[in-house]
Length: 276
Length: 286
Image 1 (cartoon, rainbow over the protein chains, first blue to last red):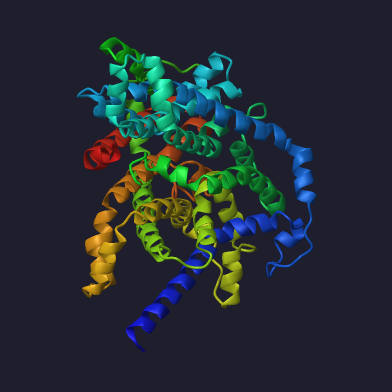
Image 2 (tube, helix red, strand yellow):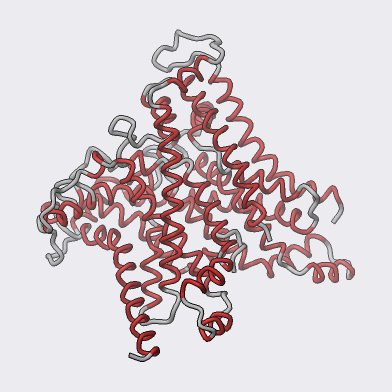
């Protein structure tokens, strides 16, 4: 074989390998979706069934029994609300830090990031008791506020990086022309940083949607999110796999589809805009 | 912009985060110094450091610290090494690359609770799970994964979720690698490994640092995966610090001891954070 042929074969093996790895990684998800269309008996059949007559019973049952729409609505409201609140606080702050940095700016940002490392359990009880006192237990408001707070450090970091990349000369030129700060933000910075702001918001929505700890511990039937609904299926319904799969599929489908569509923007956000 | 405006704009984010840190933390510290058990509301009073003593001398404490470190360490190793390998594997044009990419990154978008439930039931169940079925098919004895290898099971579950994260980021930064440089190296007779060590790895240094940092932030307080699968058991075999505190607070109702644990976890997180931020923090900013 010539060198070229060897290279071709190597390439072919790599492609087969890539497909195998992809199938392996995707398999649990595929299996979950497949199981959601089985009856409970089919779900635990040995050997496992790949071909069967699909049923939609699980999905209708979930709707009847658990009020999926209410949980889904909670997820939507808390994810979007938390993200919006955090962005509202973060955009002006990150803007100020990026365009008028002081010696301490980077340290402040790293301090913010370090608050992200505090384990939530360490402050669970105070937060629980405080929200109980304020009558906020099992409301969407408490989740919106907490989601905004836990995502704020990451959002600040990403926005800071994006704003930094806007060439300062443009701003200086506009200041010479006497543009006001407000116009500077809305007409020059925002259009340039739009992609960055969108990536940041997308990432924040994904993180909020999948958040389980606070949702499990602070909410129940009123404001419970899909993540909490799924967790409630953990032990007692041990062998109701097809119903579990149906709930799980419903809970994940929106955000997975969202993730597929926004891959590029999410990578930007996930690396704090520091990897291109 | 003048100084006042700058301060004014910065203030909200700093103030809310300070409050988010200080208010609950000072309450936690206060609780940790008093006798406070929801089952015995009549027992009150200042107890000094005895809650800390109780938490640290609890038989579950050393394994919890150990498990936390093993869990974070192994998931980091697995996801970075596997993520690198897979990212390099798919860094070439081929049929269906878009689909392969979508399939590879999907697990990252799955909720941790769903992820854990799917693995617990449909993969690792000792009778009906697919692992057991495969074991039977090749004539081996099926293993009750969550009972026999609880910590390993949690590591597998968390790695399955986070390796795609590493793939996603390495894949993206590989695309910005200088292709001409690689071709030149190939022409000069540099083999795969020579290119990997001298070109690819240096190019990926920053993304690797970022992946380590972000994963560490999320892994130090892993909770949902353990809550849903093993509940920290059997015994304390898969209890990490986060779960141990949770168990103290909500299963044994001892707010005092749980708060002492919370303070301990915060200190541990800060130690790790200082090291980590010193090491890779500056990488995170443009």
